[in-house]
Image (cartoon, rainbow, N blue to C red):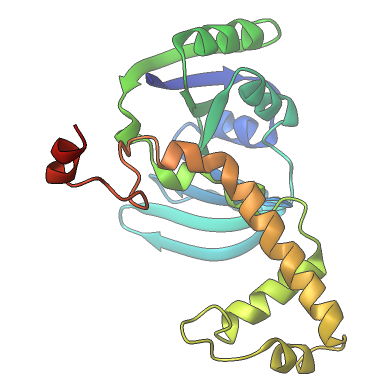
Amino acid sequence: MSLYEASIRVKHECPYRSISERYPDLTIREWPLSDCQVLEITAEATPTDELLAEIDQLGTVLHESAEEDGYHVVTQSCLCSLEESIVDRFEKHNCLYQSPTIYRQGWEHYTVIAFDGDDIRGLLGDLRSDREIELLSKTSISEKQVPHSMLAPVDQLFENLTDRQVAALQLALKTGYYEQPRQTSLRDLAEQTAVARSTYEEHLRKAENKLLTNAGQFLRLVTAMTTSNPLQVETPPQEEQAAD
């Protein structure tokens, strides 16, 4: 199976893109999560008071530093800059979005992994229908080059899990329920909550089921380069000859 990595840049109305256009030496990297974005903002020069005020409006500052080689800040923002329409179009054309999105000099830069060259051509034609877009590169890659970390974005892995299911899973992980040997029991875990054991177990099992189901869609890609089944017993050569 052939894989392709494509880098494209897009222009459309977006708050982060607009900031990068007004401040050409600024680079914004965005990692989208399920309900927010984490932004890494770097500048080659000391930011002006005007720029600092705009950064403060983006969200909560998690880290900030100013060194001789420039300015660096990490924020958590609730702005929905990564258009749902863009993500939907990637998926429509069988392309996997690889974060982060990079905003620089008025452009949004995206990297996607596609399974066929026609998928990329279809995506580009779709995007060109309503926005300015440029294809920067398209490279054929081997399956071993696909970064596994980008195949399973965090927000997709935990998609459809309720808050209680996530909390049940987090408690089980924290207290060693999944260690070998187990460090706790379902009864002990339930006693740390305000729900009955049966209710806690239901939350935990549903969380496990949803997590594995969400991860399953990426399993084929992760194991694509494996030519043998490590669980399958191979017939020794001498036995094959005897069978003949």
